[in-house]
Image (cartoon, rainbow, N blue to C red; front, side, top):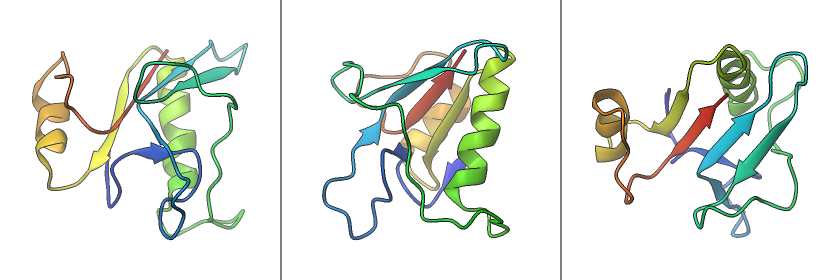
Length: 110
């Protein structure tokens, strides 16, 4: 999934210097509905929450809808990668099964 930002952040990155890129999100089964986010160091994040600035009725293609769709796909066992469009990481996300350590984006897996 290609976007205008590097991946999924714990809060909107535009104008928010405290936003952290979530490198990996692991979801439970659809029954469980739980998930755990991991930062760039591979450590679990303190909170399992992603804040977006979209309204409840987002029709603009904002991150809220993208995150929800990616979580639902991962619950079915299909990995999703969220990357910035037009970058080397976007190309790598499409071509490779294994991601290089310098890859920048968010991988969502079940």
